[in-house]
Amino acid sequence: MTREANGNVNIFAGDATKLYKMTASSSTWVDVSSGAYATGLDRQWQFAKFGTRLIAVNGTNPPQSFVVGTDTAFSALAGSPPTGRYIAVVKGFVFIGNLTGFPNRIRWSALENPIDWPVIVLLGLLHFFWMRAAKNNFAEVAAYAAVIALLLGWRLNQRWRLRGA
Image (cartoon, rainbow, N blue to C red; front, side):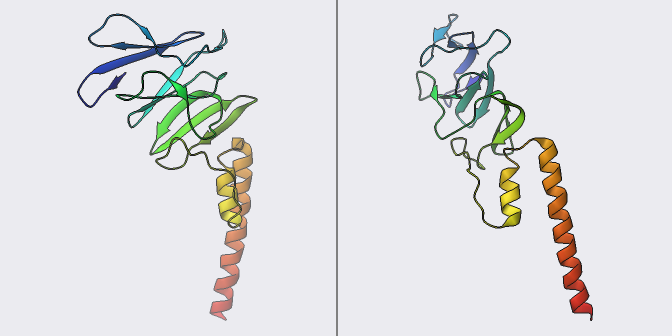
């Protein structure tokens, strides 16, 4: 459910092949799909609201976007978002999980930008592992965090020993 700036309430839903919208003033579902979708029998649409944008995922098709109050139909979410089954918005990030081909992975967007999905950039060891965390299995992230903690701890220990001597 979304609310437009003028107060109108919209309800969204999806089935195996289409996405629909119903307004508070209407009791009929209107097709707002950008084409036919291929939602599997064991899957369902998940929706998350980011500002005025509604993002829908079904684990099969690329994430779909609908800007409330502006768009008349869903379209593929811009950028290079992953395809996944679950979606959530947390503290300015859009998270997509259970990625196609990688059911134990999650990825997230750039801060306050649901159409920017960062590519790994080597800007130093810590930054590299932090950015990589957006694409890896949780077990791998824990291993990277442990390695970084050991390296930083060793480096700080060496620095304090030199200053104390």
